[in-house]
Image (cartoon, rainbow, N blue to C red; front, side, top):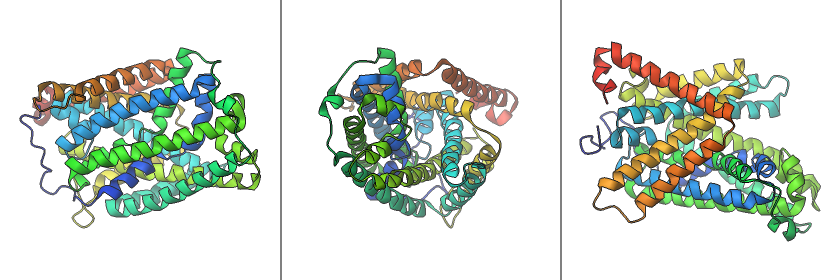
Length: 432
């Protein structure tokens, strides 16, 4: 089924359009300014060597193309579910399912990992217990409505940005070695691609804005602006962090550090401020966790409406206008995961899942632009670059990560095939 036959109006009993431009920008910033802005620079430097800035530029290019494609589609299909909805309407139901399944499985694993990071900061010997408590609290918050989620995310974003500003000033206060920032060498093309993949995953949360497309006011205008503002802000922040860290520590020390910005502050004239970076990283992880949990719930809601997931998950609370059943189910799964699993394999699978999700979005944008006589000249080239970029970054992932991700995707596709074959109600969908 394509967009020519599928309405883009939210169904009866759908979510309420309560988010304005500022709310949407805040949710995007909360998703992207996670722990990655504090910790991803180290592994990226280890992979790219002296080509870290080049890796950042490549990641920014792929992210910008993906963001442009998803924002364009969100304006055309302002529904919950993001690339799930776009793939289903532009490419067919199997494509939409692949994107939705990749997002739900991958991001559920990510939720558990983020919660465990926060739990380890509170109780290192038993991180699962505080992690589970955080997940329970955030599940309740997501059930209370998207406006409350946006308000809490706004507080976390303001604090994280303040911490970053103080940390960058403190790290630069001792002077920066611009030669270390501009030095190149010591890396390989494969290493640059791997570093670009790490940085891409760290700030790819702009999709959370489009996943909430059914809750944004004036989505045709608001979503594109919110994605552009949030992504531009985060790219500037990441560039500043990379420049300051490299200038303060050099490539070798940056690559060896789990929290390079903290070590850069510790090496400066105010080392006592280094503790702020650790606290900021924990708060950033919480902000990211809250937005990811919200996105998983909305995608599960969209899939349940189409009978791709159990239909009860499509229930929307008339009081909070939140998909309470989907959020409770997602929260319960994450609690089980943080209490029983270390998630190393699942996190590997989530990396591939994220790129599958964006690849479907870019392919949908490419197909849509090809048959739209009113398309803008840049739409098809941008979608093509985004699609190729996703494929290249998948190829740069460790083979075990790709295998785990493809295995998780295969399980979902096989389950859908069985459901379509044996369920009369789903048999027609199985031919989509």
